Length: 331
Image 1 (cartoon, rainbow, N blue to C red):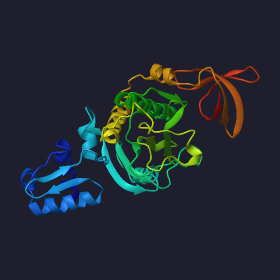
Image 2 (cartoon, rainbow, N blue to C red):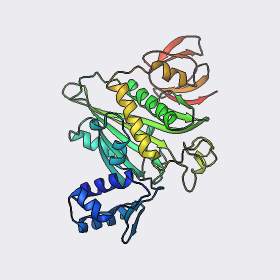
Image 3 (cartoon, rainbow, N blue to C red):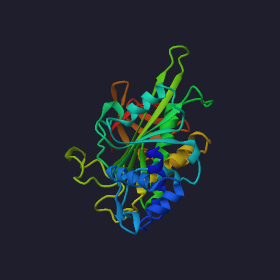
Image 4 (cartoon, one colour):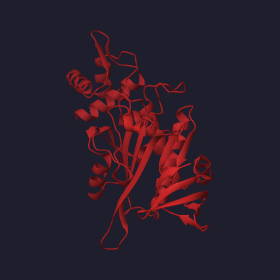
């Protein structure tokens, strides 16, 4: 009960951010007692919401508040808001771990697990993903493939997610983004987003039961900066030295909304994004070191075909497609 009241209060205060709304009006609008409103406000403050309380004036949500909220996300979705169900946590080990457990227990497609912080966030090959509190977007989207009629293609969904993030960042900021095949989004040569798609097969028919799309985006510059080992390779959309930074307080909620809208278009509505994806790739024409089945190869990337495979020239002159692999170095 109190969780529903909290969500509705946030929706009201968010729509009137910076303005005081009386407790009596909120109680009347929600058809609950003033005591219930007071308890919910107290709980919201404990959750991290910066809510001002003033006698005879009521409650106001600070304009600087940037807390992830399902209500605020849905309020910023121009379409498909009914297609997603949000589960938001303050701190988790990994949103992908939680999402996988939910998927095993039959969670519907469109279930989205989001956290303010991950203590053990990870990407491809088990690499850790720096996920400090309140600065990024750490979310996992469930696809229940038992109930989906679409034929699942892991390469396609990962590229669709990368394209959705890339386009969404450009829609809310003045930044130009690039994509490093297959799943990393860059700004000015530094990584701002990583994507990891995981799934599980059915022992009965050998088909995938579910897939989980994990997306980590560095939105705001961390309070204490990035760890030394990431200084030269990672960045945030809102960099401390970035004149193009979007200081809008709801940027994370807005970005989640945009990413989900674009992803739904690409995956469920089959909106073609091949040319846009290819245009954003910065590997075409470059020599790269790529790990394929635990073996390093030096290749020159010639193209990305319409199945999102790399078309590459190997050192022996052979030209072949690469459908999966991990890019180590490029020049």
